Length: 301
Image (tube, rainbow, N blue to C red):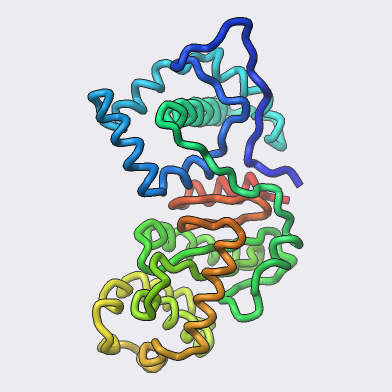
């Protein structure tokens, strides 16, 4: 099955390239760039480098964009096109894809100048392979394993980007409910204290007690997660099942499930959230409705 995590061919030249002309041997994927940028350590490093140049990181990015030539983009264009299943007839789509290549070249140059190495995700993991490596039986899930798309999400209700993405994910699950097999996996931002993982623990209980309305419960958890961790008292004015589960924050069964998910994710190489796996492709960072739709199109079997 073709994967739309895109690869590249080697650029060579008889003369050494200047720093501004640097082209990587392999162009990093959007996902690996997002993951690199999600690291606070890397962001600090990038901002310090930008400050040393007397500009902001945003200004540096715009400066580098102007230095990327059409010839630079062409070095990757043929290879990139081969990864797309059908011929591209829409000129707007061509422009978008070429602009994406430009941005990936820009970040490659910025990372190189900042001495930051990009860690690529394992993008060739098959459906059978990955599903055999994760605990599915106890995880919140919708749909059937043999659906057109398998979507696995690692997230936390305290994660701002996860909260931003969830309404779009919820709409997607409703729109394609007979075509998506969705699995939710816990990845606490802070897994060292029981209080910090309380929303995820409550989520596990809600899945146990009321799976039919679980996406509504997820929405409620995103809305109240920060309040929950500030107080050990149950949230007031909630439904019966919510109040019942809110009182289960210290239940060992649910605490263990959250922590097992966390350890499992780290073994798979998940380091930041939200992280998604869709039909063999890894995606790191927030998604909106348009990017979700494009992702499903790109990963359609």
